[in-house]
Structures are given as structure tokens and as C-alpha cells.
Image 1 (cartoon, rainbow, N blue to C red):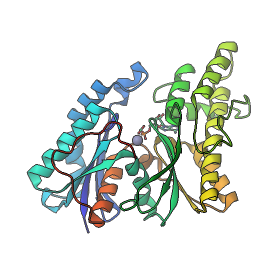
Image 2: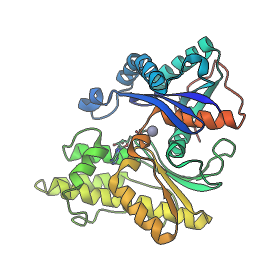
Image 3: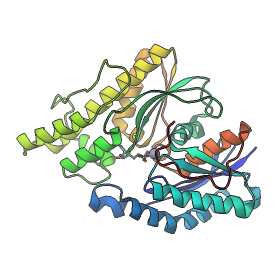
Image 4: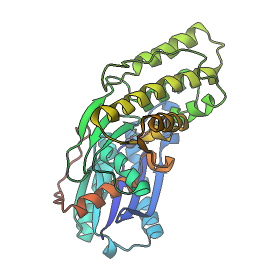
Amino acid sequence: MAVVLGIETSCDETGVGVVADGRVLGAALASSMDEHARFGGVVPEIAARAHLESLTPCLLSAMEQAQVKPGEIDAIAVTSGPGLATALQTGLAAAKALAFGWDKPLYGVHHLAGHVAADTLEHGPLPARSIALIVSGGHTSLLLLGDLARDPIVHLGDTVDDAAGEAFDKVARLLGLAYPGGPAVSRAALDGDRAAIAFPRAMLGQGYRFSFSGLKSAVARQVEREPDLSVPDVAASFQEAVVDVLTRKAVAACLEHGIDTLVIVGGVAANARLREVAAERCAAAGLALRVPPPALCTDNGLMIAAVGDLLVEAGHPAAALDLSADPSAPL
Ligand code: KG4
Ligand code: ZN
């Protein structure tokens, strides 16, 4: 059994988590989200400074919760990309210092593999083959997964413009809602009529690529034309358009590839309406649906530790201490 410490600093969350044998031992999370709110998006320099301040307290707190001492840790895992360059570098510097100081192997982890592995902490190992829908602030991708530690991840398609979370954030801004937009839009949508406005469903029937910038522009035009429009109605109708396209394509990918398990991960997977529609459509298609609890959907250190754990168990070679950040790491 390996005890793995994971560090995540690719965006605005500083996450440290300790995992042993696919189980959560302890975790800590700090966010600079509030500091970015007035800019309407993440400011890399502010995020990097916040990581520097939060890394040590998060490390100490996660280790205390996990009740592990440095001698009991077998490996250090850290997000090496993709993400904001300066933000990634803070986590990498911390991870290398720990690996060097404590003489532990170091593993660089792909952020998206982390999002997928988060689900294994809740629902156990993935089946031999599954389809993952990754929906976050930076990514919207459909992936064909085998063994996470051994097989390459196959890209079926991703967004050609905005990511789903980015669309939520931009629409929140248009509607005068708080940042980050996802939680704010979904809260507003609770009181709205999702059939109020028939927003476009881009690229349906055109394979596994997504497009959300046209939808965002349609919302902007609608708000401009009818400034007195009900914000909850716009929020609910927009959310429905996003959820409809995401779930239709994800279910189609499973059926086309003869795969019976869909995993939905990433920040937008915290969206209650997405979870609800995905559950309905997966049940209708005879598919098993796996979605981690909301706290494991958004960025955190545990998901990175979970990948580290799989890599250690698979006997993967560790990275050298000159491991560098790869802000635009391909899958
Ligand atoms: O995975 P994540 O924490 O960070 C990235 O790797 O991007 O995802 C953050 C994104 C943001 O765009 C945020 O607005 C969105 O996830 N999000 C949501 C919800 N909670 C977070 N989107 C829709 N509904 C939510 N409840
Ligand atoms: Zn993420």
C-alpha cells in the first residue's frame, strides 16, 4: 500500500491531499477565488502569490488530518499541466522541495487525469473501459479511457472555442451574477423556466466536438434586446442548452463505442441539473453513470494524489527533480 501526497496549483485553488490505496486520508484546500472576483476571471499573478501563501498551511493541515508523518509518505504527486504557468510552478517547486528533502519519488500528473481519478476515490476503480466527459473552466472534452495508469487516454473531441465552465462564467457576467459563474447561474436557474427561451444547441449531430461561444453570444443578444427579461429564466434556459448538448454527446459516445460506463468530472460536474439530466439519459440508455460528489468535482489535491497512487501501484518510473511545468500539456 502506498501513501501518496498530492499537490494541485494549476488555477486558483491550492489543494493538498493524502491518499492511501484509493482511499482519502486527509485534505486541505484554499482558494484565491474572491481575489479574482472583481476582475471577472482568474489573474495568474494573483493566483501564484496566493498559492505561495497557502501551500505550507494546506500541507500541514492535510498531513495533520491524515495523521501521517513525512516518514510514512511513499511518494509526492503534483500537477505539472495544463494550467497557468506561474501557478503550476509554485506547486512544482513545493513538490520538488518535499521530494528532495524527504527523499521521495516525484510524479508529475496531468490535471485532467486528476479530474477523472477523483471519481475513483468515491466509487472505486474504473471498469476496463469507460467514457469520460470532462467539463471544467478550461476544458470540455469527451475521452475514451482504459486503465488510467497504463493506457493512453483517447481524445474523442473537445470544444472548438469556450469551455463549458467558461460559458457559465461569461453568461454570469452578462447577467450581472457573481464570479465564479457556474454556481451563481445554477442558483439563479432554480427559480427559472428552462423552456422560456430556445437557445441554440451548437454542433449537435456533428460528432464529439462542442461549441459554446455562439450560445454565449445568443444570451448577450437576448439580454440586449429585452433588458427586462427574467434573469432566472435566462439562466435556466442557458443551463438547459449546455446540459442538453453535453449529455446527448456523452451518451452517444458510450453507445457508439459499446461502453457501458460514463464518468462526468470537472467543476461543471458539480451542476445539479447536469447530474439530473445525465442520470435520466444514462438510465434510459442502460448506462452506468459515475459522478463524484461536488467537492471532488472542482480542483483539489486529492485527485492528484489519486493519480500518483495509481502510478505507484502500476510501477511507473518517477520523474526527475528537474520536472518542468507544461502549461499547455496535451493529453
Ligand atoms: O475544474 P474546476 O474547478 O477548475 C478548472 O480546472 O477549470 O472548474 C471550474 C469551473 C468554473 O468555470 C465554474 O464556473 C464551474 O467550474 N462550476 C460550475 C458549477 N460549479 C463550478 N458550473 C456549473 N454549475 C456549477 N454548479
Ligand atoms: Zn480542473
